[in-house]
Amino acid sequence: MVVKFSKPILIGSAIGTIVGASILIKDYCAGNKYEEPNLIENKVVIVTGANTGIGKETVRELAKRKGKIIMACRDLKLCEKAREEIVLETNNKYIYCRKCDLSSQESIRNFVEIFKKEENRLHILINNAGVMRCPPLKTKEGIEMQLGVNHMGHFLLTMLLLDVLKKSAPSRIINVSSIAHFRGRINKEDLNSEKNYDGGTAYAQSKLANILFTNELARKLEGTGVYVNSVHPGIVETEITRHMSFFNSTVSSLFLKPILRIFLKNPVQGAQTTLYAALSPDLEGVTGKYFANCMEAKTSQEAHDEPLARWLWAVSVKWTKLDNAKEYQI
Image 1 (cartoon, rainbow, N blue to C red):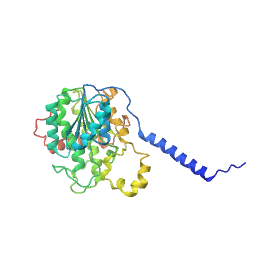
Image 2 (cartoon, rainbow, N blue to C red):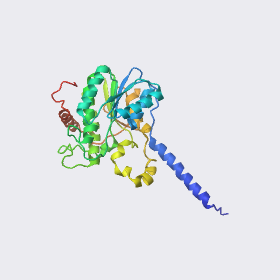
Image 3 (tube, rainbow, N blue to C red):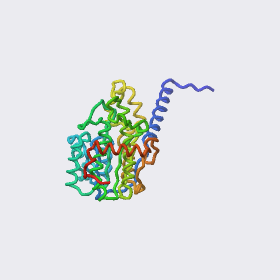
Image 4 (cartoon, rainbow, N blue to C red):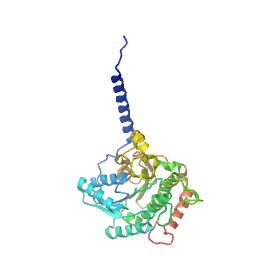
């Protein structure tokens, strides 16, 4: 006997199958969640780029765990709005906004000066802020914006805070990198993208720089009790895509984004690996590693290039004007 189904039933069945498959795919793409219940009472944390996206959700979770958190942000108005929301939700009043524009080395130095006047401890530094695929822009020091913010700014911030991190040991540094580092190459002949600028290439270079910095810093800090690791948060839908015309076009908004969202993490999901690296007791003493989806992951071959990491370190010291400074010690 042949069973015939009406058109509405067939359409409904197809829609149900598509929705079900979408939910399964979305759940798979969300990745693992950090669920250990450990609190961080009496610990001081700095999170850069903390007023939106992954940074904001990182602060929210750390606030729930009773940490004292400094939100280091360029836009204090947006920072204060996010801070108030998180304080009201978590009932943790020890959340503070401080001005830190990573595209200005003067702003970074001012932030550190103020921080050291207010605090003598720092247990977790989360270098989260970043820009991606922006037009050809420069920092106030004339450094290509993505390299300047994503790497050089965080390099300077970290170096200036090392003395406090050492005094507070065991302490942790987490550098938010990206799977895009696999496409990255450190262009020694044109590190500042003066000869030829491509937004995607410059972004990938900056994310590779994050990992090379992480690995070299881990080697230099061996035995100090300061542990430094890098993370890939996943492919996350945040404001970092604001410079990508593909994501912001009318066609994309109407047709592509609804489909792409199935495969993208939201900011809460994107924060999980950062939280794992910052909080997990299993990582006490673990340093110089790269994590994705709350587990150790492989990096590109170039990320293991120690001579290249030392070269980048030397350039970074020079470009951040630390070459003759006594502001940091390794």
